[in-house]
Image (cartoon, rainbow, N blue to C red; front, side, top):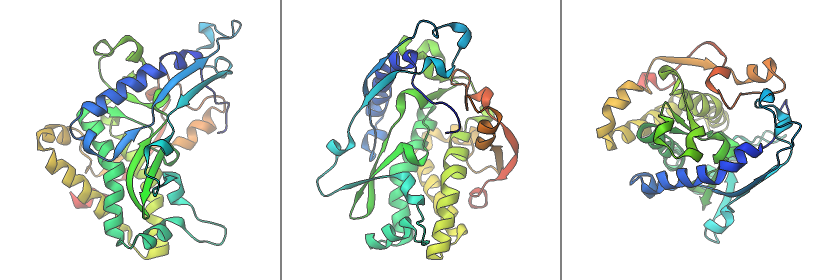
Length: 296
């Protein structure tokens, strides 16, 4: 990061409660509970409030985040002995000799590219769609925050981590939540809600993934985004009761706002995002053509 990053005692105080709440929502959702997806709970946390820095005038300053820790579940305790773990970020790895990891994994799996992607979307994209459309719950689903479980080089499950600080409920009334969980309810313009998919998934990860598949496996950009679109349409078909919400938050619109993450760091090298007002921190520059729009 281009700035000081830490953990505040205030956030650590409610982290276990937030994790319990998210885990409870997921376990009681009949769809998510059957999906190969889970969170790595942060079961306990500690934080120290330094008196001189614990002043309201400092707001979310890094001086209030100098000494804290959290204890997260170990994914190795949740997999079979023959299974392997990789961060999702590793799928974008290309070494100094130009060898890419993702094509090597797909080839070793003995599946076709389409079959492998379908398994991958099932453990990653489907749960994110269910959480958003059913619960208005979003995570920070970048590559480092996802731990993928592989069985014979095929993704069979995903663990989401960094829950306490980064999960949000979009435009949900805080009054409907337990006191310790109210912090995760944020207000966001309705037309920005889908940026949790468009920016965090499409722009920040899938577009790099599609380039690797094209350069190393001659799998066209068109084929990749058509596969994404097909998976989304299957999800929508299987959840027809949410059709009004699918129309309200349309994943197949022609273009979406270009949220510029690098500009956040360039604009403020002390704090990338004000966690008390994440929507107010966003910076935009024009539109990005939606790569799945042609397949609506």
